[in-house]
Each structure stands twice: as C-alpha cells, then as structure tokens.
Image (cartoon, rainbow, N blue to C red; front, side, top):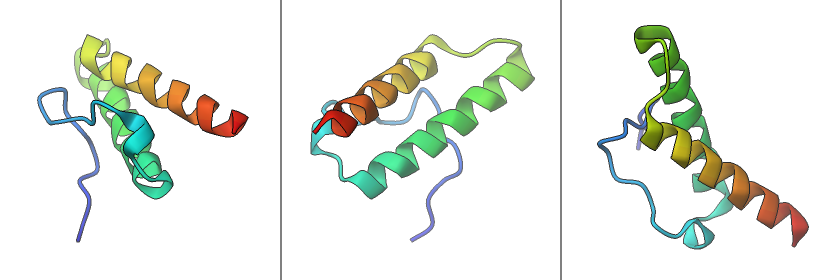
Length: 67
C-alpha cells in the first residue's frame, strides 16, 4: 500500500493520536509537514487546520518521549 505524500486539511485525521501506532504517527507527521511546506509555497501561509494538526502531532511525540 502506497501512502499519499501530503494530507490536505479536507482529509480525515485521527481524533485520538494516542491510539495511532508509532510508524503510522511518523507517516502522518511527514504528510502534514509536506502539506505545510506546500501551503507556504503555494499560498504564502499555512492553513489553520494543517497548523493545528502539526501542533497536535508535536504534542503527541513529546508525550511519547516522556513515557
């Protein structure tokens, strides 16, 4: 199965990241980061939903590092 390179704001995103496995979390992080980069280049600024997802992923990684 091939993963998409970016995750647009319109696409679904897990409500509870604690239930997402480590590998899938890393994939989500890469997709969201690529989307952020795309939005900044194409639109001049990131979409709020994409920024929120990026923040949520950072928080989940930080929480997992504490465990």
